Length: 108
Image (cartoon, rainbow, N blue to C red; front, side, top):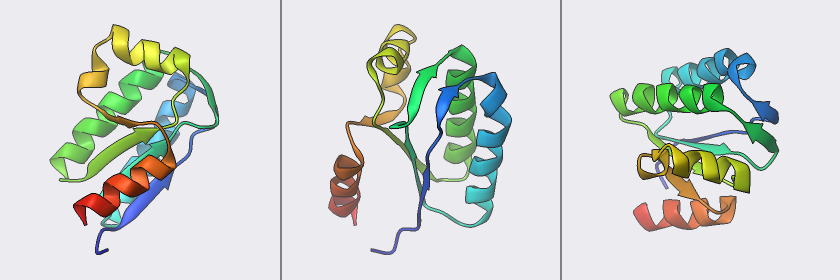
């Protein structure tokens, strides 16, 4: 596998207070030359529209840098937020990290 993967694991409430740190992690990952980023939401309990905005900004940054973005392990509240805003059509959302690994192995 020649793909460089970065995993980002936010914790707790993913909102505007976490957005700057998240964007910094995205920028650092791009600068380090990653090809794929997985954002694992396993430890996130709640996400508001500011958190979703941070993800949209990250997606735009990553698309411009030709970096793939995947999201996994979202809870029901986050899933509903994605569906209500139709953002689930723009993000690659997977059930688990294991599913991400399978997806990555298929494309390798």
